[in-house]
Figure 1 (cartoon, rainbow, N blue to C red):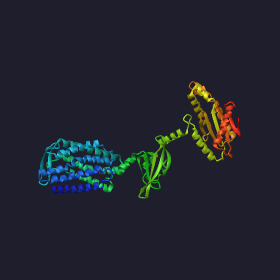
Figure 2: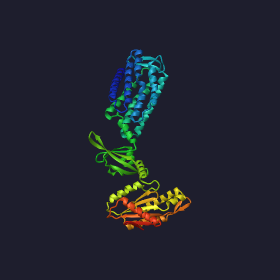
Figure 3: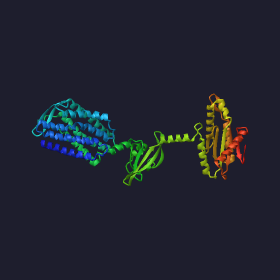
Figure 4: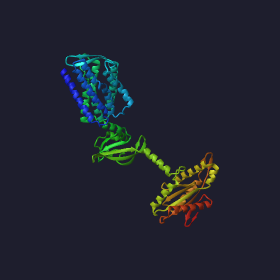
Length: 504
């Protein structure tokens, strides 16, 4: 048994060396620092243990303990930090690193200074059965603090592992279960050695630590366990609001993140290879409206090929919620194109859309232009104040939007004047429509504070038949001339521009 124990410890040293070389060679792996430090610390621990158990004297045995404690106090805290990295947790700040490593560093220093400093061990003595040697000791205060820190880190690390066994994905549960098994051996060995060690008992803790790291190494080769990047990246993607759906070129489902499954609940029940065509609301490109949490949300859809070299192996379809951006753009567009007071098109936008209408028609459709001026508007402002005048303009604009068709352009031309462009109406129809609107305004009763305001409008109508071509500016001049004829004729009337002169 003693010879087998020594052989096992020697083998653990060899395995430790292999793992150090392996982890350093793979140092480009995301967040591999703690694992590298773990394997280096474990090498000191196992090699020092080998020196201790084969030492013939107290001095040489304690030299082996000193070598062990170049790494032993750091192992459990490093393992906990490695688990945090593995599960994609945010790394601790420098201050927290100092806090978590303060006791291990004090342990390392105080043991190296023994017997000048008796904080780690208060007393030591040499013990051997003729083949296996060991240093027995009386615990010091720093030793006990180190044991307490180790068990705190063990509890925190196991809670991380168990939470992912319960709540993680299938891959996470499998990897977490491997981590759990690898932790049980050193935990059981250390617990047994600390609380139940006897005079001639063997300390299997270094072998157990090497065995745990050997499981990591084996898993790294078979399951890519050491590469925490895919796992961390999967957690980041699952935490994003954007919905990610992975499919093949024929839109057969392969995978999706949690946001996609919340957006399309059917995905949660789908298996790889099922067609996405039956998923309600799914489309592979463009934009779409999807009801979410009781409201319609707008999503922009982008499809990106998943490439291996130059070969496309699938498609990543991203649904990004652009509802807020669209609302902001709509608000900016509305502010840029509409009159702030009345809500109808401002002068510049009216001209832009009117010119587009002229260009679109190309002389094939009849067009009519109405110029509307509020009668005695200055008197309203002077008598009741400008806020009352603003209320009058807003009421007239609301009446115009309600009276004219959605396809008609309604704009504020300036001051108390409005311009309206009508499509596909005869001159008689245009005049009738304008006259109906004039009567509507005449009958309005505008409530302002404790008063009822009544106003009237003068309207000029210019008409361009389908067979004739006119510029927008010409039609505006004609409508303006007809409107001034209404003013000159006593106001509150509609006039049509016909030929070279307007007629009432």
